[in-house]
Length: 267
Length: 265
Image (cartoon, rainbow over all chains, first blue to last red; front, side, top):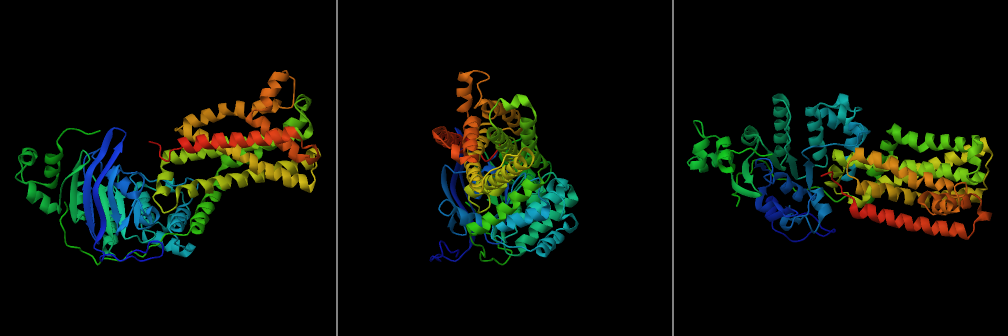
């Protein structure tokens, strides 16, 4: 159990990394998240799939503390995000959809800054070692804007995990990457999970969801439509008329996704 | 809603802790000072511009009509503060907001007030360094000498006055979302905030204009600093300027806090 104010309260043994109950988020009159509930087990990679505007990023933003939910409960390792925001933030590592850092800092200075913000004191050699692990040792004195898209994503993932958080939130971590960089990042995500950490990621890629995620939720219009393993989702929905209507041959996860969320374009 | 699934890795107990405020401030201040020192635009605005204006105010006979020697030094100091706060600080805040730098910082355990306080502290130090440079240059090249007490009092008043201009910078960053628009608005804001104050001790445009100028943000700061540079001349006008500067600071900071948004959307 995580100590709160120096006291370790009595609590059931940890089994869930994240519990979200009946979460609602609104932007003025528009409800972006409408009663979302989900549980993520320790050591699990959980994918949130949905078309643009489905509410994935808003759900993540509420968990990250960037958005104030209208209602609902978010517990990270039993810590209530609203009651103990600083502790909750210390328990998570975050990679935002579009990450940017201070333009004047080198990437080793950026790593040092974010490590410091989590109370992790890293020496120069330690920072260099971590950068070398992600093949950025030679770029240590370059600015973030001077890195390629794949390098930027790798750095963002390193910074998200610089304090070894038990839960990592990744918002479209591989968007805009070429297949090689995407595969590399999947390996790194799998590596994070191997160390026992839990991951919640959003993605538009069915291939990513199938390759990386233990379980997947499909979300649309602020609601979670279905949750299961990728194979379980196909099995569960392969006879749905809406899924069969869009399937071209054997039903795939993408058919299930489009069948449940519709074929119309989203902006 | 969700069904249990096989956990494929050994779970770990969270080893994390909430970092101490001192750790957070150390990390933020180190980064913010580095950013300030590497920002060529900020350095130019901080040090070169007030020195150029100082020498210009002393070299041309026209500017002698604006006020005594202490006032002209105070005008250069005020310009330096306005430049750092309005064109430097607010622009950096708007740019970082557009890029999402603040959102990235906000998902860390650092309280939001520490993120902005660190940035403001760096600006106050930059303003103080600029003030000392201008005072030393005024002493060396224009023979405007201050007593040790006057140096101290002027430094205190510079720190105090920096709150006014940083409040203006914060208000602008709060009211104007786009960095490009803010760049344009900041330049326009110069007129009422700094240039108007140049005539605070001069009746060349008439007494009404002088009165308006004297109680403009720039005018109150210039009157305050002129008094601080020569403490024996500190009078009721200086006290009123001090009070007016404080009132301006509260108003601008209030606007900046009320309307500031961390994200660009």
